[in-house]
Length: 277
Image 1 (tube, rainbow, N blue to C red):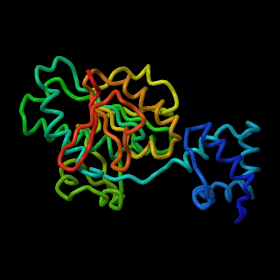
Image 2 (tube, helix red, strand yellow):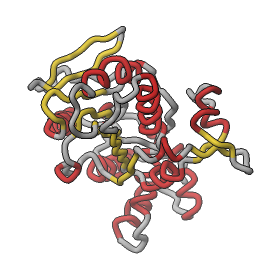
Image 3 (cartoon, rainbow, N blue to C red):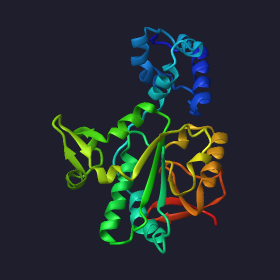
Image 4 (cartoon, rainbow, N blue to C red):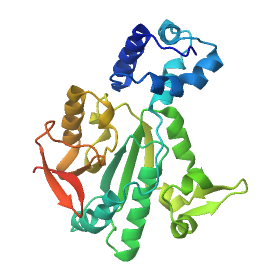
């Protein structure tokens, strides 16, 4: 890959990326493109971004667009990230939703990456059920989606190395929820995996086929989108929630100026949103 990305190449690639998956690069992100695409372009022996986009648009390589999006959207994640949302889930939302419940609680983990967020939700569900016998009688169903096929395949395997588990997973939970494999990897136990279903989804697509949810986690995603696309996604997230449903965004994200269908709830230094009934 050429060390220098010309303004024309940058504009061309930025336009492709926003159209394909909604990510708005903004200005001066040449370093990000170079670092994330270096390996792919070296493998394909492509020297510049213009040739990469041209090859992708030619249609000769059916997997190239997927690989480009994978490279640009794959982000690191961790277990019990930011902790507050999971504390709120356990201490405030589950007790409220399990009152006189006649159906399973449905949760959507949007942009789930390699599975740490939805599997953390499943662990919290299990811990709540153990502390409140009968409280989860109707169960919890977790849908986890991501645009990247690569990370979804990793998530479905539910196996992680020690380095991945060191990012937020306590030793006590590691021993409780995982079993060690022969290759020094750890496999998530079936009772945690069974609550989670994975599916490929671009947040720019329709959510109508997903059904309604009681809780949606869409964290650390909206920061990559334009203001117009944020408003559109938030509007559709609201329509995907049951009345009074809950929405969690990333710690640096806010609904301010984008959507007035929610009430903001403050809890112990954290903020989440509840759909107005």
